Every structure is written in structure tokens, then in C-alpha cells.
Length: 113
Image (cartoon, rainbow, N blue to C red):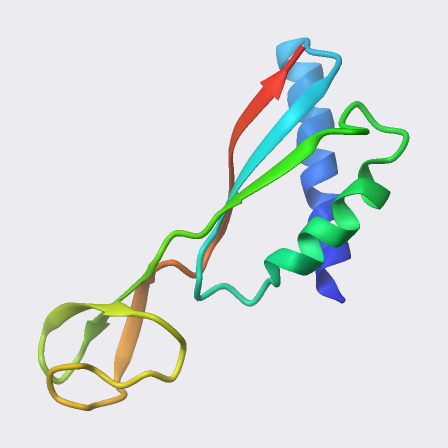
């Protein structure tokens, strides 16, 4: 499960930001996890408490937002909504779609003390 490694990366980011900004406690972590990303939001929610145990984010809430997918249809030359990888273009039915949004994971906000 690569979600454990992703959550460990979040912990390292939190520790680095705490040192840089001088906070000692994280109460809430907001994470944007695009619908086209390969990370499972439920797996992240599951492993978050275990990975944060003993850290400044122990007991913190994890809030996950799911930005929609967007893509560029190469044959049509138009931007389209993409609900899932492998879906065809709704205009031409083609599969040559370059994903432009919704495939990333980004820590966007923190509530700290």
C-alpha cells in the first residue's frame, strides 16, 4: 500500500513546516486528492492516525477534498471533464486525452496551534 509512504511524506512536510513556522501542534490537515490520482482516499484516512502517532499531528483530523479531473482531447482540441482514467472524449469518442488536472495530491491547508 503506497498510501503509507504518502502519509509518511505528509508527516515529514508537517514537521518541516512546524520548524519553519514555529507551530507545535497540527489539528487539521486539508489535502486535495484529485479524482484521477492513483492514491486511495480511504486508505489514506485509514493509515493517517497510525503514521501521525507520536508526532505533532497525533489526533489531527484529515480532510480530503476531491478536485475533478480535466483533460485535453488531442483530436478535438478541446478541454473536457474526465471522470476516470480511460474514459473516452464525450465529443469524438477518442481516447487520446492528456490529463491536465485532477491527478495530483496537494497539502493545501493546516489548522495549527
